[in-house]
Image (cartoon, rainbow over all chains, first blue to last red; front, top):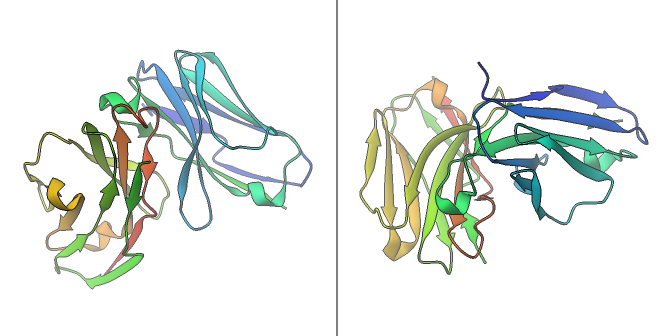
Length: 115
Length: 116
């Protein structure tokens, strides 16, 4: 069973479209994240939810909106997609906040290409 | 502010060579955690190890070993007798117990190519 699963794995879409990436974890974790990996492989935190509460909202355009319907799910919706949004988006989860020493486990990534 | 530096962008070795991946971190917290992740060509991020700031014992797991030295703020990763399957991008990461406790900060990664 996949611990952190995200769909779709690959997404090619046109500029201006709206798209969503879904994420689910079956680890019973309280904290979930979205990370973005750019073309140079740099990984940067976008959002984090702890017990369904938004606790991190980095400098991300407000075209990106996370939604956490429950602790096991954290979806990412992107409006008006731009070329620069092309990246790999990783969903992740941890038992609690990483500052408590909790390990973050990642999904397999969603490759988004905007054309 | 927390920061992780992986100065080696890319390393290429021949199979069976030993290789060390460097990681240097900056933090103001006295309690923090260090991690290594592996990203193989298939793209997923695989957790390798977690270390807390109070445990400076080196760790060995098969061909992998980690050397944590607080005096030099380093957490280096050595692969002994490298294999082609070790080819991947390796990331070092840091979380702080207080200041930056809410997320991991990653280094820029080191791409390791192991040639047969």
